[in-house]
Length: 293
Ligand SMILES: Cc1cc2nc3c(=O)[nH]c(=O)nc-3n(C[C@H](O)[C@H](O)[C@H](O)COP(=O)(O)OP(=O)(O)OC[C@H]3O[C@@H](n4cnc5c(N)ncnc54)[C@H](O)[C@@H]3O)c2cc1C
Image 1 (tube, rainbow, N blue to C red):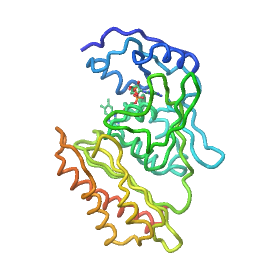
Image 2: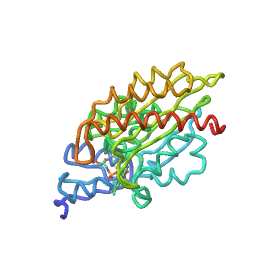
Image 3: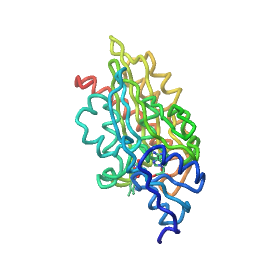
Image 4: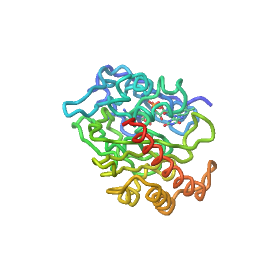
């Protein structure tokens, strides 16, 4: 199908883009990499009267290390540019590991970090990884900026707190500090497909190699990324042994309340979610054993 007619607008500054969005309200749609928006337009699932292409707004794709050692990522940064950033594996290893799992390289060439976060597909890797990493999202509008934590950003299935007059301009990641081990695991039908179930986690270790703090986030199991608080609490202060990992598997299986859809049943997602969480813990522990922190 062809998209319904729309006006194509191409602002050259952020102020102009924000003014256009304020003017158009619900009728305006931001175009970033187009990897999700273009299919939605072609299928006429989205019928905005105006598409506001922000690709020519300078500076929106900037990425730099902040003074405190965190990372600032411009929303328009292409997924592929992160993948090709040699320093990222050192600076934010979990994020670096997640990027190649997104679709195929042709999609990552155009797809942006911000586009994936705002599109908010519950099976997407980046919303879960940003939640796991404790990122803040900067939303800009004509009246200024506000920061929203990833925990508060997602409301439900493809729904976020972004208002029609706002653009996601920046993602701020806290520094990757301390002795951390991490993992990301997912099950998808084919390589490059969205995950049917996925988990991403990190653990900070104390001097005796016990877990000081853990963050465990599931994706593909609900309308939005799910942090499994009880599993995080179970690991806090725990030794990295098989008994603890098995308990986490059970907690995750019990805690998840997924839906069934054409890709997988709710029961499958619960069972596989628990197994993946345990596998991810083992994968993370392997990094410690191999001295790969
Ligand atoms: C075949 C295929 C396979 C894929 N597989 C995966 C996968 O395995 N995992 C995965 O995570 N993703 C996958 N994707 C999706 C891909 O990651 C998209 O790039 C991403 O979802 C959207 O990013 P985009 O820059 O293309 O955004 P667009 O398509 O341009 O926009 C998406 C939505 O976000 C809004 N938007 C975009 N940027 C902003 C902004 N800065 N501020 C406010 N609103 C904004 C748009 O208005 C639109 O509603 C796949 C896509 C395809 C086509």
